Length: 439
Image (cartoon, rainbow, N blue to C red; front, side, top):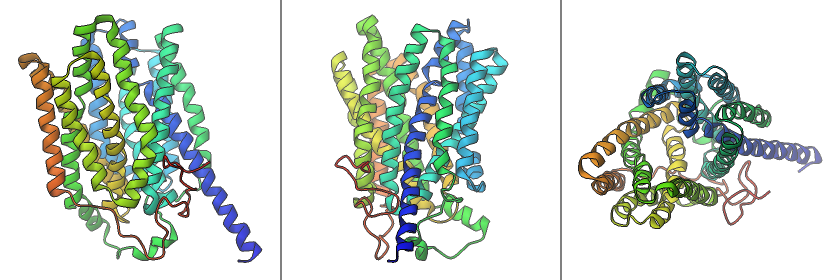
Protein backbone atom coordinates (compact mmCIF):
# COMPACT_ATOMS: atom_id res chain seq x y z
CA UNK A 1 0.00 0.00 0.00
CA UNK A 2 1.33 3.43 -0.96
CA UNK A 3 1.93 6.14 1.62
CA UNK A 4 -1.03 8.07 0.18
CA UNK A 5 -3.31 5.07 0.63
CA UNK A 6 -2.03 4.55 4.16
CA UNK A 7 -2.67 8.20 5.01
CA UNK A 8 -6.21 7.95 3.61
CA UNK A 9 -6.92 4.76 5.53
CA UNK A 10 -5.62 6.35 8.75
CA UNK A 11 -7.85 9.39 8.20
CA UNK A 12 -10.91 7.16 7.69
CA UNK A 13 -10.04 5.18 10.84
CA UNK A 14 -9.69 8.40 12.84
CA UNK A 15 -13.03 9.65 11.54
CA UNK A 16 -14.74 6.37 12.44
CA UNK A 17 -13.16 6.40 15.88
CA UNK A 18 -14.30 9.98 16.52
CA UNK A 19 -17.81 9.17 15.32
CA UNK A 20 -17.98 6.13 17.60
CA UNK A 21 -16.85 8.20 20.57
CA UNK A 22 -19.35 10.91 19.66
CA UNK A 23 -22.17 8.37 19.60
CA UNK A 24 -21.04 7.01 22.97
CA UNK A 25 -21.23 10.47 24.55
CA UNK A 26 -24.48 11.29 22.81
CA UNK A 27 -26.14 8.18 24.27
CA UNK A 28 -24.89 9.10 27.73
CA UNK A 29 -26.12 12.70 27.49
CA UNK A 30 -29.51 11.77 26.05
CA UNK A 31 -30.08 9.30 28.88
CA UNK A 32 -29.31 12.15 31.30
CA UNK A 33 -31.93 14.29 29.56
CA UNK A 34 -34.61 11.61 29.56
CA UNK A 35 -34.14 11.07 33.30
CA UNK A 36 -35.55 14.54 33.87
CA UNK A 37 -38.84 13.55 32.23
CA UNK A 38 -39.35 10.50 34.43
CA UNK A 39 -40.71 10.49 38.00
CA UNK A 40 -39.52 14.09 38.49
CA UNK A 41 -42.48 15.33 36.43
CA UNK A 42 -45.01 14.00 38.92
CA UNK A 43 -43.01 15.27 41.92
CA UNK A 44 -42.70 18.73 40.38
CA UNK A 45 -46.36 19.03 39.43
CA UNK A 46 -47.42 18.02 42.95
CA UNK A 47 -45.26 20.86 44.29
CA UNK A 48 -47.10 23.20 41.90
CA UNK A 49 -50.47 22.23 43.36
CA UNK A 50 -51.60 19.80 40.67
CA UNK A 51 -54.01 17.05 41.72
CA UNK A 52 -53.22 13.41 41.05
CA UNK A 53 -56.00 13.31 38.46
CA UNK A 54 -54.55 16.29 36.61
CA UNK A 55 -51.06 14.77 36.74
CA UNK A 56 -52.44 11.49 35.41
CA UNK A 57 -54.06 13.32 32.48
CA UNK A 58 -50.80 15.09 31.64
CA UNK A 59 -48.75 11.90 31.77
CA UNK A 60 -51.39 10.06 29.72
CA UNK A 61 -51.17 12.72 27.03
CA UNK A 62 -47.44 12.07 26.77
CA UNK A 63 -47.91 8.29 26.71
CA UNK A 64 -50.62 8.38 24.04
CA UNK A 65 -48.59 10.82 21.94
CA UNK A 66 -45.55 8.55 22.10
CA UNK A 67 -47.56 5.47 21.18
CA UNK A 68 -49.36 7.18 18.28
CA UNK A 69 -46.12 8.74 16.99
CA UNK A 70 -44.08 5.54 16.70
CA UNK A 71 -44.89 4.68 13.08
CA UNK A 72 -45.14 8.26 11.69
CA UNK A 73 -41.89 9.23 13.44
CA UNK A 74 -40.13 6.17 12.03
CA UNK A 75 -41.33 7.02 8.52
CA UNK A 76 -40.17 10.62 9.00
CA UNK A 77 -36.69 9.53 10.07
CA UNK A 78 -36.51 7.24 7.02
CA UNK A 79 -37.49 10.11 4.73
CA UNK A 80 -34.93 12.62 6.05
CA UNK A 81 -31.41 12.15 4.74
CA UNK A 82 -29.40 13.42 7.71
CA UNK A 83 -30.06 11.36 10.85
CA UNK A 84 -27.74 13.61 12.88
CA UNK A 85 -30.01 16.53 12.01
CA UNK A 86 -33.04 14.54 13.22
CA UNK A 87 -31.22 13.85 16.49
CA UNK A 88 -30.26 17.54 16.82
CA UNK A 89 -33.85 18.73 16.35
CA UNK A 90 -35.10 16.08 18.79
CA UNK A 91 -32.67 17.30 21.45
CA UNK A 92 -33.77 20.90 20.90
CA UNK A 93 -37.36 19.75 21.36
CA UNK A 94 -36.34 18.24 24.71
CA UNK A 95 -34.83 21.61 25.65
CA UNK A 96 -38.07 23.40 24.80
CA UNK A 97 -40.12 20.83 26.73
CA UNK A 98 -37.97 21.18 29.84
CA UNK A 99 -38.17 24.96 29.73
CA UNK A 100 -41.97 24.85 29.34
CA UNK A 101 -42.15 22.78 32.53
CA UNK A 102 -39.74 25.03 34.40
CA UNK A 103 -40.89 28.52 33.38
CA UNK A 104 -44.67 28.32 33.24
CA UNK A 105 -46.23 25.02 34.41
CA UNK A 106 -49.83 25.81 33.50
CA UNK A 107 -51.91 23.02 31.91
CA UNK A 108 -51.55 24.31 28.32
CA UNK A 109 -47.75 24.45 28.44
CA UNK A 110 -47.45 21.17 30.34
CA UNK A 111 -49.65 19.40 27.78
CA UNK A 112 -47.67 20.93 24.90
CA UNK A 113 -44.42 19.88 26.58
CA UNK A 114 -45.67 16.31 26.98
CA UNK A 115 -46.76 16.16 23.32
CA UNK A 116 -43.46 17.62 22.11
CA UNK A 117 -41.43 15.28 24.30
CA UNK A 118 -43.50 12.24 23.28
CA UNK A 119 -43.04 12.82 19.55
CA UNK A 120 -39.36 13.78 19.83
CA UNK A 121 -38.62 10.63 21.81
CA UNK A 122 -40.02 8.65 18.89
CA UNK A 123 -37.72 10.38 16.39
CA UNK A 124 -34.61 10.29 18.57
CA UNK A 125 -34.49 6.53 19.20
CA UNK A 126 -34.73 5.56 15.50
CA UNK A 127 -32.23 8.28 14.59
CA UNK A 128 -29.67 6.85 17.04
CA UNK A 129 -30.28 3.32 15.71
CA UNK A 130 -29.95 4.55 12.12
CA UNK A 131 -26.68 6.35 12.87
CA UNK A 132 -25.38 3.21 14.57
CA UNK A 133 -26.20 1.13 11.51
CA UNK A 134 -24.69 3.64 9.10
CA UNK A 135 -21.57 3.91 11.24
CA UNK A 136 -20.61 0.24 11.63
CA UNK A 137 -22.76 -1.75 9.17
CA UNK A 138 -24.90 -4.78 9.89
CA UNK A 139 -21.96 -7.08 10.67
CA UNK A 140 -21.00 -5.11 13.80
CA UNK A 141 -24.43 -3.73 14.68
CA UNK A 142 -24.83 -5.86 17.81
CA UNK A 143 -21.51 -4.69 19.24
CA UNK A 144 -22.43 -1.06 18.54
CA UNK A 145 -25.85 -1.45 20.16
CA UNK A 146 -24.16 -2.95 23.19
CA UNK A 147 -22.03 0.17 23.51
CA UNK A 148 -25.13 2.32 23.13
CA UNK A 149 -26.86 0.47 25.96
CA UNK A 150 -23.80 0.71 28.22
CA UNK A 151 -23.49 4.47 27.90
CA UNK A 152 -27.24 4.98 28.19
CA UNK A 153 -27.25 3.03 31.45
CA UNK A 154 -24.38 5.10 32.80
CA UNK A 155 -26.25 8.23 31.74
CA UNK A 156 -29.40 7.07 33.51
CA UNK A 157 -27.49 6.53 36.74
CA UNK A 158 -25.61 9.83 36.56
CA UNK A 159 -28.76 11.71 35.59
CA UNK A 160 -30.79 10.22 38.42
CA UNK A 161 -28.10 11.17 40.94
CA UNK A 162 -27.66 14.72 39.63
CA UNK A 163 -31.35 15.47 39.31
CA UNK A 164 -32.24 13.82 42.59
CA UNK A 165 -29.66 15.97 44.36
CA UNK A 166 -30.85 19.06 42.45
CA UNK A 167 -34.46 18.40 43.43
CA UNK A 168 -33.55 17.78 47.06
CA UNK A 169 -31.09 20.62 47.66
CA UNK A 170 -32.24 23.30 45.21
CA UNK A 171 -35.87 22.88 44.09
CA UNK A 172 -38.10 20.66 41.99
CA UNK A 173 -38.24 23.40 39.35
CA UNK A 174 -34.43 23.42 39.10
CA UNK A 175 -34.51 19.81 37.83
CA UNK A 176 -35.99 21.01 34.55
CA UNK A 177 -33.54 23.88 34.19
CA UNK A 178 -30.78 21.29 34.70
CA UNK A 179 -32.41 19.05 32.07
CA UNK A 180 -32.34 21.93 29.59
CA UNK A 181 -28.68 22.62 30.37
CA UNK A 182 -27.73 18.95 29.85
CA UNK A 183 -28.95 19.18 26.25
CA UNK A 184 -25.92 21.35 25.40
CA UNK A 185 -23.27 18.59 25.71
CA UNK A 186 -25.61 16.30 23.75
CA UNK A 187 -25.56 18.78 20.87
CA UNK A 188 -21.75 18.98 20.94
CA UNK A 189 -21.53 15.17 20.98
CA UNK A 190 -23.33 15.15 17.62
CA UNK A 191 -20.60 17.14 15.86
CA UNK A 192 -18.43 14.11 14.90
CA UNK A 193 -21.55 12.38 13.59
CA UNK A 194 -22.38 14.94 10.91
CA UNK A 195 -20.50 12.93 8.30
CA UNK A 196 -22.08 9.59 9.17
CA UNK A 197 -23.98 8.07 6.19
CA UNK A 198 -26.88 10.17 4.96
CA UNK A 199 -29.18 7.14 4.72
CA UNK A 200 -30.25 4.84 7.55
CA UNK A 201 -29.30 1.84 5.48
CA UNK A 202 -25.90 3.12 4.42
CA UNK A 203 -23.54 0.23 4.92
CA UNK A 204 -19.92 -0.57 4.55
CA UNK A 205 -18.71 -1.48 1.05
CA UNK A 206 -18.12 -5.15 1.84
CA UNK A 207 -21.84 -5.90 2.02
CA UNK A 208 -22.94 -3.86 -0.98
CA UNK A 209 -22.87 -6.84 -3.28
CA UNK A 210 -25.51 -8.56 -1.18
CA UNK A 211 -28.13 -5.86 -1.81
CA UNK A 212 -31.42 -7.11 -3.17
CA UNK A 213 -32.86 -5.77 -6.44
CA UNK A 214 -34.64 -2.46 -6.03
CA UNK A 215 -38.40 -2.60 -5.54
CA UNK A 216 -40.96 0.11 -6.00
CA UNK A 217 -41.32 2.30 -2.94
CA UNK A 218 -44.81 1.10 -2.09
CA UNK A 219 -43.92 -2.55 -2.63
CA UNK A 220 -40.80 -2.19 -0.49
CA UNK A 221 -42.80 -0.69 2.39
CA UNK A 222 -45.43 -3.43 2.25
CA UNK A 223 -42.80 -6.15 1.98
CA UNK A 224 -41.16 -4.93 5.19
CA UNK A 225 -44.33 -4.24 7.17
CA UNK A 226 -45.91 -7.59 6.27
CA UNK A 227 -42.76 -9.59 6.90
CA UNK A 228 -43.75 -12.56 9.05
CA UNK A 229 -40.68 -12.15 11.27
CA UNK A 230 -41.50 -8.50 12.02
CA UNK A 231 -45.12 -9.33 12.88
CA UNK A 232 -44.16 -12.24 15.14
CA UNK A 233 -41.46 -10.21 16.85
CA UNK A 234 -43.86 -7.30 17.38
CA UNK A 235 -46.37 -9.65 19.02
CA UNK A 236 -43.64 -11.09 21.26
CA UNK A 237 -42.46 -7.58 22.18
CA UNK A 238 -46.01 -6.49 23.04
CA UNK A 239 -46.55 -9.50 25.34
CA UNK A 240 -43.12 -9.04 26.92
CA UNK A 241 -43.82 -5.38 27.70
CA UNK A 242 -47.33 -6.15 28.94
CA UNK A 243 -45.85 -8.56 31.49
CA UNK A 244 -42.78 -6.49 32.35
CA UNK A 245 -44.05 -2.91 32.73
CA UNK A 246 -46.20 -3.37 35.88
CA UNK A 247 -43.85 -5.67 37.81
CA UNK A 248 -41.69 -3.04 39.53
CA UNK A 249 -44.63 -0.73 40.37
CA UNK A 250 -46.45 -3.72 41.92
CA UNK A 251 -43.32 -4.69 43.84
CA UNK A 252 -42.95 -1.08 44.99
CA UNK A 253 -46.52 -1.07 46.31
CA UNK A 254 -45.86 -4.31 48.17
CA UNK A 255 -42.66 -2.92 49.69
CA UNK A 256 -44.42 0.24 50.84
CA UNK A 257 -47.00 -1.73 52.81
CA UNK A 258 -44.29 -3.86 54.47
CA UNK A 259 -41.38 -1.56 55.23
CA UNK A 260 -42.90 1.92 55.21
CA UNK A 261 -40.31 4.69 55.04
CA UNK A 262 -37.57 2.28 53.92
CA UNK A 263 -39.48 1.58 50.70
CA UNK A 264 -37.89 4.48 48.81
CA UNK A 265 -34.40 3.19 49.58
CA UNK A 266 -35.25 -0.33 48.44
CA UNK A 267 -37.03 0.90 45.31
CA UNK A 268 -33.97 2.96 44.47
CA UNK A 269 -31.87 -0.19 44.77
CA UNK A 270 -34.36 -2.00 42.52
CA UNK A 271 -33.79 0.65 39.85
CA UNK A 272 -30.01 1.00 40.17
CA UNK A 273 -29.12 -2.72 40.24
CA UNK A 274 -30.59 -3.56 36.80
CA UNK A 275 -28.92 -0.46 35.35
CA UNK A 276 -25.55 -1.69 36.61
CA UNK A 277 -26.16 -5.08 35.04
CA UNK A 278 -27.14 -3.49 31.74
CA UNK A 279 -24.05 -1.26 31.78
CA UNK A 280 -21.73 -4.21 32.48
CA UNK A 281 -23.39 -6.83 30.31
CA UNK A 282 -24.75 -5.03 27.23
CA UNK A 283 -21.49 -4.96 25.23
CA UNK A 284 -21.09 -8.71 25.76
CA UNK A 285 -24.70 -9.30 24.70
CA UNK A 286 -24.14 -7.30 21.52
CA UNK A 287 -20.92 -9.07 20.70
CA UNK A 288 -22.43 -12.54 21.22
CA UNK A 289 -25.40 -11.57 19.07
CA UNK A 290 -23.01 -10.70 16.23
CA UNK A 291 -21.03 -13.92 16.64
CA UNK A 292 -23.68 -16.50 17.60
CA UNK A 293 -27.05 -15.11 16.59
CA UNK A 294 -30.00 -13.26 18.08
CA UNK A 295 -32.45 -16.00 19.07
CA UNK A 296 -30.57 -17.57 22.05
CA UNK A 297 -30.05 -14.20 23.73
CA UNK A 298 -33.63 -13.15 23.08
CA UNK A 299 -34.88 -16.38 24.64
CA UNK A 300 -32.62 -15.80 27.64
CA UNK A 301 -34.09 -12.34 28.18
CA UNK A 302 -37.67 -13.55 27.78
CA UNK A 303 -37.15 -16.44 30.22
CA UNK A 304 -36.17 -13.96 32.94
CA UNK A 305 -39.68 -12.50 32.88
CA UNK A 306 -41.84 -15.46 34.00
CA UNK A 307 -39.13 -16.48 36.46
CA UNK A 308 -39.16 -13.00 37.97
CA UNK A 309 -42.96 -12.97 38.26
CA UNK A 310 -43.04 -16.33 40.04
CA UNK A 311 -40.27 -15.28 42.44
CA UNK A 312 -42.03 -12.00 43.26
CA UNK A 313 -45.21 -13.99 44.02
CA UNK A 314 -43.59 -16.67 46.16
CA UNK A 315 -40.66 -14.84 47.81
CA UNK A 316 -42.04 -11.47 48.97
CA UNK A 317 -39.22 -10.71 51.43
CA UNK A 318 -38.08 -7.06 50.94
CA UNK A 319 -34.41 -8.03 50.74
CA UNK A 320 -35.16 -10.72 48.16
CA UNK A 321 -37.19 -8.29 46.05
CA UNK A 322 -34.01 -6.34 45.33
CA UNK A 323 -32.11 -9.53 44.43
CA UNK A 324 -34.93 -10.74 42.18
CA UNK A 325 -34.92 -7.41 40.38
CA UNK A 326 -31.41 -8.24 39.13
CA UNK A 327 -33.14 -10.55 36.62
CA UNK A 328 -34.64 -7.44 35.09
CA UNK A 329 -31.14 -6.25 34.22
CA UNK A 330 -30.50 -9.44 32.23
CA UNK A 331 -33.85 -9.10 30.45
CA UNK A 332 -33.32 -5.40 29.74
CA UNK A 333 -29.86 -5.96 28.27
CA UNK A 334 -31.09 -8.72 25.96
CA UNK A 335 -34.40 -7.16 24.94
CA UNK A 336 -33.11 -3.61 24.61
CA UNK A 337 -30.36 -4.62 22.20
CA UNK A 338 -32.37 -7.19 20.25
CA UNK A 339 -35.22 -4.79 19.35
CA UNK A 340 -33.15 -2.55 17.02
CA UNK A 341 -30.88 -5.42 15.99
CA UNK A 342 -33.60 -7.84 14.88
CA UNK A 343 -35.47 -4.97 13.21
CA UNK A 344 -32.28 -4.19 11.29
CA UNK A 345 -32.07 -7.83 10.18
CA UNK A 346 -35.67 -7.81 8.97
CA UNK A 347 -35.62 -4.42 7.27
CA UNK A 348 -32.41 -5.33 5.46
CA UNK A 349 -31.48 -2.71 2.89
CA UNK A 350 -35.07 -1.71 2.16
CA UNK A 351 -34.49 1.87 3.36
CA UNK A 352 -37.34 1.47 5.88
CA UNK A 353 -35.42 0.52 9.00
CA UNK A 354 -36.76 3.24 11.25
CA UNK A 355 -40.31 2.72 9.95
CA UNK A 356 -39.98 -0.92 11.02
CA UNK A 357 -38.66 0.23 14.40
CA UNK A 358 -41.78 2.36 14.68
CA UNK A 359 -43.99 -0.69 14.13
CA UNK A 360 -42.23 -2.61 16.91
CA UNK A 361 -42.33 0.48 19.13
CA UNK A 362 -46.06 0.82 18.56
CA UNK A 363 -46.58 -2.79 19.68
CA UNK A 364 -44.45 -2.14 22.76
CA UNK A 365 -46.49 1.00 23.50
CA UNK A 366 -49.73 -0.96 23.37
CA UNK A 367 -48.38 -3.49 25.84
CA UNK A 368 -47.12 -0.81 28.23
CA UNK A 369 -50.32 1.23 28.04
CA UNK A 370 -52.71 -1.65 28.72
CA UNK A 371 -50.65 -3.56 31.27
CA UNK A 372 -50.51 -1.16 34.21
CA UNK A 373 -54.29 -0.77 34.33
CA UNK A 374 -54.90 -4.50 33.92
CA UNK A 375 -52.32 -5.48 36.55
CA UNK A 376 -53.67 -2.89 38.98
CA UNK A 377 -57.21 -4.23 38.56
CA UNK A 378 -56.08 -7.81 39.20
CA UNK A 379 -54.08 -6.74 42.26
CA UNK A 380 -57.03 -4.80 43.69
CA UNK A 381 -59.51 -7.66 43.25
CA UNK A 382 -57.37 -10.76 43.79
CA UNK A 383 -54.19 -9.61 45.51
CA UNK A 384 -50.65 -8.83 44.38
CA UNK A 385 -49.59 -12.48 44.47
CA UNK A 386 -52.18 -13.42 41.83
CA UNK A 387 -51.22 -10.34 39.81
CA UNK A 388 -47.57 -11.42 39.75
CA UNK A 389 -48.54 -14.94 38.71
CA UNK A 390 -50.79 -13.57 35.95
CA UNK A 391 -47.94 -11.44 34.64
CA UNK A 392 -45.65 -14.47 34.81
CA UNK A 393 -48.20 -16.35 32.71
CA UNK A 394 -48.19 -13.62 30.05
CA UNK A 395 -44.38 -13.66 30.09
CA UNK A 396 -44.42 -17.44 29.62
CA UNK A 397 -46.80 -17.05 26.67
CA UNK A 398 -44.41 -14.54 25.10
CA UNK A 399 -41.49 -16.94 25.61
CA UNK A 400 -43.38 -19.87 24.06
CA UNK A 401 -44.44 -17.74 21.09
CA UNK A 402 -40.84 -16.72 20.57
CA UNK A 403 -39.60 -20.30 20.93
CA UNK A 404 -42.07 -21.85 18.50
CA UNK A 405 -42.52 -19.20 15.80
CA UNK A 406 -39.65 -16.69 15.78
CA UNK A 407 -36.75 -17.74 13.50
CA UNK A 408 -33.13 -16.68 13.72
CA UNK A 409 -32.66 -13.39 11.83
CA UNK A 410 -28.88 -12.95 11.86
CA UNK A 411 -27.82 -12.41 8.24
CA UNK A 412 -25.29 -14.77 6.67
CA UNK A 413 -21.69 -13.61 6.88
CA UNK A 414 -20.48 -12.02 3.65
CA UNK A 415 -17.52 -13.87 2.07
CA UNK A 416 -14.21 -12.35 3.03
CA UNK A 417 -15.67 -10.11 5.74
CA UNK A 418 -14.02 -10.46 9.18
CA UNK A 419 -16.31 -11.71 11.91
CA UNK A 420 -18.00 -8.96 13.84
CA UNK A 421 -16.44 -8.15 17.15
CA UNK A 422 -12.97 -9.46 16.27
CA UNK A 423 -11.49 -5.99 16.23
CA UNK A 424 -10.93 -5.87 12.45
CA UNK A 425 -14.39 -4.80 11.40
CA UNK A 426 -15.23 -1.25 10.35
CA UNK A 427 -15.39 1.44 12.96
CA UNK A 428 -14.87 -0.84 15.98
CA UNK A 429 -11.57 -1.24 17.77
CA UNK A 430 -10.28 -4.34 19.54
CA UNK A 431 -12.91 -5.67 21.87
CA UNK A 432 -12.24 -6.02 25.59
CA UNK A 433 -13.54 -8.95 27.71
CA UNK A 434 -16.71 -6.96 28.40
CA UNK A 435 -17.24 -6.51 24.67
CA UNK A 436 -16.60 -2.78 24.54
CA UNK A 437 -14.24 -1.38 21.96
CA UNK A 438 -10.87 -0.78 23.54
CA UNK A 439 -9.95 2.79 24.14
